[in-house]
Image 1 (tube, rainbow, N blue to C red):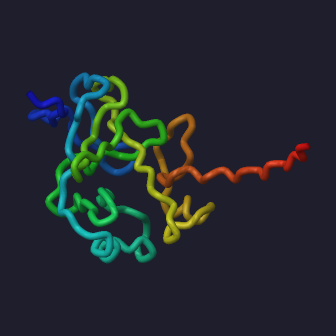
Image 2: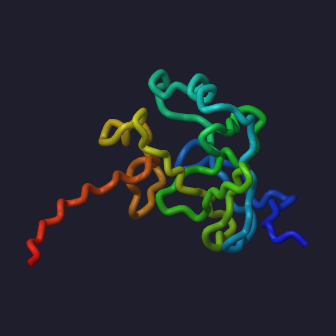
Amino acid sequence: MSLTKRVPKIQPYVIKTSKIQGKGAFATRLIRKGARIAEYLGERISHEEGDRRYDDDKMKRHHTFLFVVNKKIVIDAGVDGNDARFINHSCDPNCEAVIEDRRVFIDALRTIRPGDELAYDYQYDRDDATGWGKEADAQYPCHCGAEKCRGTILLPEKKKRKPRKKVKRG
């Protein structure tokens, strides 16, 4: 018997208009904490191909269905993808993305009630291309409405550490 979680055969959510962003996924039944909700599917491409397809600097606003799997693979759910691509970002998510064996799954972080919108923290990396600060945050805005919304789908900025005072010993 396999101990791995299985994706449900009957989709436990429906796609409809979202207050967060465009379309969203909404629970159609109670989803228990830890349940595997969906697999994020789409064409598996290189990072270079993803950058070619979706140039943020040339887009009016950031919008892709890309999911980074590892240093070599990105899933483009805009090509041969499924409805998991409509699960929106939230700074206070009820789901999480789990990468297992180069596959991406969406699991429930807590029990989700019927009618609740499914969301996970996209945690976009602030690499050299994205940068830091208000300009980067503005390019990747968040509209989740969470009490502690950080205003961006980017990872929080790293807090600068205060230098430690040297203590003379002896």
